Length: 467
Image (cartoon, rainbow, N blue to C red; front, side, top):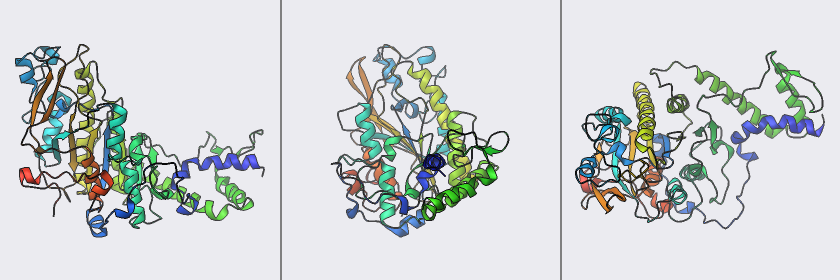
């Protein structure tokens, strides 16, 4: 078989590249001047890792969700003191009354998913931290996405998920035959997955594998209406029956001395393909919303609840992003209600299976100002809500944590929530530390630049983590 025919056949391996066994992975990352991760300083507790058996969905809210979605407490003050360029108080912009927009009992924005938040709060399925307050002056997207998706302020060019996978790899926590350990839906959020700071490359079985929200099988053969696959020379019309596909490739690999390594890939490819086909048709105990976010979370939960090897799934939440400098109330309302409806279904799904190790965390670049600008939008702010759902196996039920006040930086120009003087607060880097702690890293601050886990125990008497 000619070289270009081999290359053409090998192109079918593209989908399998992410699951190559470690013998086909590079051993060393090139030295490009980036700050290396201090992996030698990490303390890993295998007992915590095994006991928690954590399965985490990380949702990065690119663009920055407004904290008004989970905290409407200060809208009345803005209206009463006439602090917003576009005043609150009538019709669709009257968030704090029972009109087009309203508040729930716990000051959630009712029409933006607030009823789902109330339900999950009542069911002890949600911890809401209202005082994730960035002390960095910048509220630029690129800078903050990098800081908080990487989870450190030391310049380590490694996303939270990539860093976690390196620690698990160095400590032998994941067997080499594990499948779909690290999954992203619709490509997740790429900065969480960046991997440029470790002295050694991740093996293929720990690299991210991406699925679309429809859970299409990327490892299945592309067969035409006659059940045939094209594996011929580019210049010919030669077509082979699908039943001959593996046989032809096996012969091709043997001829080109690639059999030992690549045969493992094809076997693994088939195993994953069969798993996907099986899981796609499993009858679910709940019905997910027929929305973009509903399909994302259904796919994520199908994988998590049926595959013991999957540890992390990343999702981009809100599909079109949250950077609403115009028409913020209309856009946020529809986007947030869709997102929280999907998460509510995911929590019902996990609870029905008694999978108390599944947890979902939502955070983003930053929060937003609360005053409406001239385009009916919310500009960037310093404070954000962090929503953490599920995880009863290892998390205490804290409910709503953190007290805020309205900071009037300049009337009609910049108003945003900030923690009160005596409230618990933390910086966004602690989100990464908390994720690391779930997986047995007992000193996560060495990876974050000194920031520990989210721990409000000094203020409220109870820590986030059990034990």
